[in-house]
Amino acid sequence: MNIHEYQAKELLAKFGAPIPAGHAALTVEEAVKAAESLPGPLYVVKAQIHAGGRGKGKFKGAAADAKGGVRLARTIEDVRKNAGEMLGQTLVTIQTGEAGKEVNRLYVTDGADIAREYYLSMLVDRATGRIAVVASTEGGMDIETVAHDTPEKITTITIDPAEGFQPHHGRAVAFALKLKGDLNKQAVKVTEQLYNAFVATDMSMLEVNPLVETTDGKLLVLDAKVSFDSNALYRHPDVLALRDLTEEDPMEVEASKYDLAYIKLDGNIGCMVNGAGLAMATMDIIKLNGAFPANFLDVGGGASKEKVTAAFKIILSDPAVEGILVNIFGGIMRCDIIAEGIIAAAKEVNLSVPLVVRLEGTNVQQGKDILAASGLPIVSADDLGDAARKIVAQVKKAA
Image (cartoon, rainbow, N blue to C red):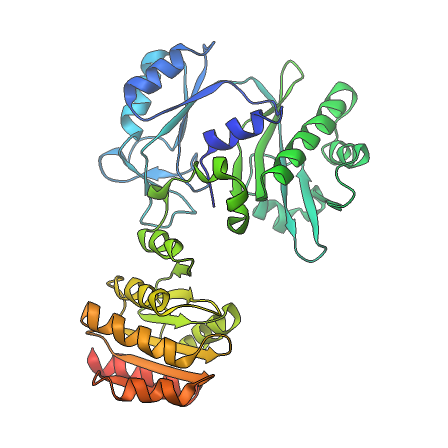
């Protein structure tokens, strides 16, 4: 789960991290009041969307000639003008794709006199089973570009969660950022504060870009992006309350209600599979046969009839779907349950696209018999290759 920058900063501030003063705003007048409560005379007006690259982004339509989603304002009237140009407009960044995201809230912060910018992030390193701290002197830039062009400017320090944060970890970060004296001590402290926040709230990623050194020798968290482990949210109702459903795909939101792993893609073949590995293989073989998957959907190993029905309805709610491939290996999941769910959903939504079903495993014959007796135009497949060829052919035939 992702949250907005202002929410991330409010959370990090609870752990002592140095955050510039700032306030969220849903209207132009709220943005003006936020600026009036800040010291000034320099303000920063930031669009709040779940995507990076806001400063380099472009607005669509009437706001197309305006500046990006992060702007400096030197007067209250500048704040008013910028807020009016941004709210309600669609911002397109390198991460949103051409569709962009509508800006429904802003973050107005106090300006900072920046001397240098650094990069600092934390994430779970699956290879080592540790928390990786990534530091670079090249803050404010796309870290992917830095990693490609000058990888020697990136330092990774891993922290064993059993050991926890130790002062030497902070000193290693300070050394990587080439900080000395009091700035060195500040870096150690900030790294520990961020680490404590990361662990305490079950984050999966924390990125501070940039971490800035001000002209008066202070380190500030100038921007922050945070993602949480969705499987741990039950432990953090306060974090879950920060979720902004307007920033998420409606179908993915609906899928989350049924604990379905669903991600919308750009193709035209809907997929319903049990197991992430099998889902990846299914998407690959669809592409191998000349088509593209419309989604990743894993119903899990023990889905009920109701859950399967919900999954089927979610796939069909995507207007781009021209055919559906169901690929189920019945281990814990019984094939007859899958068959009943498919039939129930197909009847409820009045199925109008080709459907190919490949079942294998527990109660497979019962499942096939249920599908055959349904009276619905369901094409049965013997194996995964056969299923992919049949759904692609059915879609081309229907086009």
